[in-house]
Length: 199
Image (tube, rainbow, N blue to C red; front, top):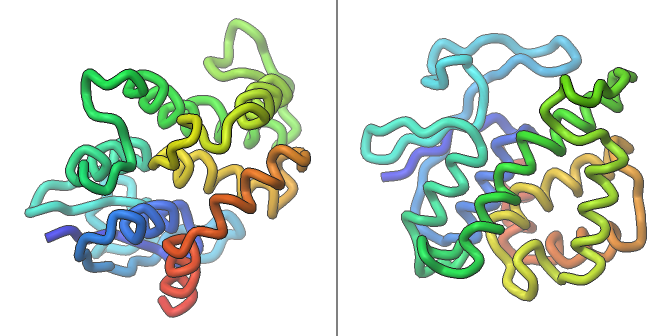
């Protein structure tokens, strides 16, 4: 059995969306988390070692970190075709874009939001403008991050782009607008919104 450790309207919403794309049975365990506005608290029932979300429990095994969970689920359910298998041509780009969310886009946009000066050679991620330029260039020529094939990357990285555009953390462009319209038109995305609102 799959159990998603989830806090509504948080990072774990991406994994909720991914599970809806997969279509396999799962359970949700709703937990409290500390929020950016100072609300919330540490939930003793949250098995995540830092009391964050998402976390996934599969037959007793705990998986944490969004990218790791997305990769785990994509490999666990190959029939959903949300990620290339080992040895397939797109496997490298798939892994690279999954990692790009947490290792480049998230810290770069947080750097911008906090008004920090990018220090080349010291910070392990690209400057915010550089990251946005790469994303726009890639999506200008591709319907999805893996070309014509929707994948878990579009849930994870695409979902983050959608979130950051809503909160003005990224620069809105026609490329981003068109891309976000494509991915948020999916039935699984709409089901996620309904489930997230229902709590």
